[in-house]
Length: 581
Image (cartoon, rainbow, N blue to C red; front, side):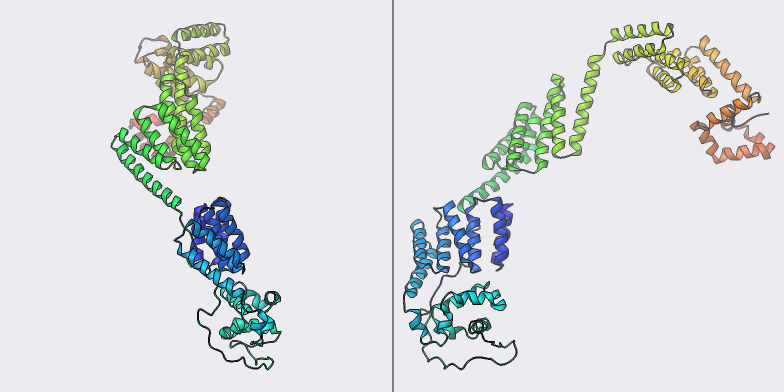
């Protein structure tokens, strides 16, 4: 963030936006308060605005942080020169040259400071002002107070070239003639004389006292004019030698990383590790080198090394305040290594905990998937460890004893434990289905009976359990189908045969219309809740068939020749939706 703000400050300075540059350099300093270059750059920006006191403060801080850096003394000399403290300016430039004797900027600054120092000790203000009628108004500190108090000239005080001209005139009032074409100087003259002066862009005549014209004199040569060192045109120290070296190392580290990535894709893991290790040696502020190397170790089955690199990446990432996604990636990679180790140690808890930490950093879908897989593996492992067929048989026998005693809740408890101990025991499901049926819990009984048949399709007791539940639910057609399916495996099973007989009796009873009104209503209400009955009634063809049964007997006779239609009509009759008289 400091580098970004610094770059913005450099750009603003280059564009002449010194106030904006100061703002960006100040922001950079909040992020890197010990960076001497930032204070140096801000000092130059202050000097460009003529704010030499602030420039001096930053120059002093620069020298304090980096006393062996010649650029800091250049800033210090410029600030002292701006404050007319030439002796101190000369001393500052000289100190800089002691460090860097061949520095041209320091040599130039020293020469200018010495020249200005000599001129400052030249003719007194009274003698120089005697040849100018305006000499007195430019002497003394009241000049700056008046210019600052006036709303127009106050704005000029923020313009370095204007301040420079006024300082030049203050030292030698005769130099006023050099700047009379500048409207700002004319405005300042009017302010100091307390008169109104119109400029070419203004209105009215010039209201000034009649002063005699100044005596002619030779235009001063360039060497005669007072010189003051301007802020250096290239004040930004964008990169130090240390920064350039660090930048070069980062660039080399990236190249090593790219080489490592290429080797990884080729499954050349040893070479990949060498490149990632070299990248880490060049730049220890990018944790991706650690996470990439960890990925290689994971592929190689070196889980301890993978975990070590991930831990280092997390620790270093938090020190550097790296992107939270990078920290999450390191934790996820560590979790993957722990899962691999858990398959041997049967301990998934460390992996689960690591994945959960990764999700607190960044909720990545891939990490969430890995967490779910680890939790599932743990659950399956726990279930596997809990399996014991012998204990399952013992629990099932206990359930049978309670069933004989008609203590069905207790029986269900032991049958459930038997299923936990041996989920593939179809007999436990069959017996629990019978217990649920006795308690009137038909949906639970039906589910257990179907599971029993699914585990062993040849076990006829399962069909008997399912058919009984369906019969009690008055789904006679379905119960009949279930009993008939069981008879395919054991044709002479008396329990199944009795079930078939009971179902047929109920179906015929409905066909003859022998049901009571209450039974009809009950059947209709139950039938309308059956999804199969709902599908039949929503079928446009079946709706037309039912209309034909009422209005077109001949067409109805034709419909009955279709086995599919006949089967559906039979289901509607059994459900009490259609009555046959």
